[in-house]
Image (cartoon, rainbow, N blue to C red; front, side, top):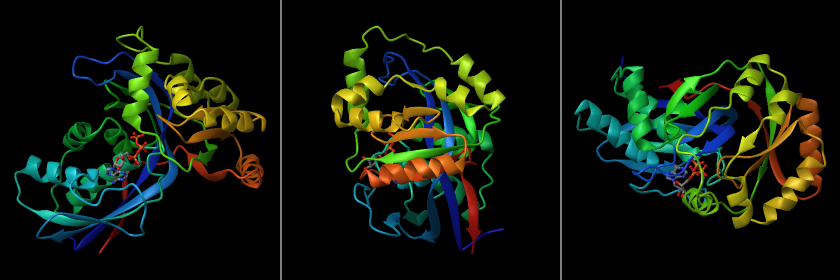
Length: 299
Ligand code: ATP
């Protein structure tokens, strides 16, 4: 069945564990990461058009509105995969912080792949969608899958893991973004002895199967923390403020600068967020884990 317009919602991701190795010959970093999709979303709407375009439902700084937008790259890659000469007008409603280490661009790419597949009734097999997603960016396949998953390779090889937890994250935003490539470059300077293959975090994967937030909180880890702290020393004070509220865990989101505080219950999370807001921090709540990219409207 063909449609005039399709809207797909895709979640932000966080990395409960982000193990980073030394760069491979192709320049990409080997990762052993545990992704979790959390409840902050971008909505991507597509309609047929004579040429590719991208627009924002509401203005947001830092998002390119030309061919550099990863949503257009995703659309072109899908059309090329099927050998079809079609284009679309893409509209993005951003709910995921830009340059926040929560993979908002990757979410848009995943949402665009799914939305155009449905708009054009392409019936792309899941494996093909995941493979195309992996060529667009390391985090794009996970945005299709959602939930909680182990990411290996350069993050693009995604295997769902059993996660019995249901938690709340206080997402502490930063007014200024942090460049992912800059953080990885500094990681390379700080970690000349990083392993060729970072180890899979078995203890965390076991704790997720048990579902207890305090055990999960103790095992949160991010190898990019020291590099992000160096580039943004102000994050150290934010981390101290978060730890003073005794959450189940504190974590840098991806390459930062967003920081995350883990709570088992929504009431504690709300109280912590209110406390931080009073102290002048900008924060929002997000549940985890949530589903990956999914259609919300056909028209
Ligand atoms: P990651 O954690 O995957 O590195 P991030 O959440 O830190 O990502 P994004 O918001 O995905 O950062 O943006 C990263 C870069 O991608 C920005 O420089 C932005 O200009 C560019 N970009 C391209 N397309 C998009 C898009 N659709 N939405 C947001 N940023 C985009």
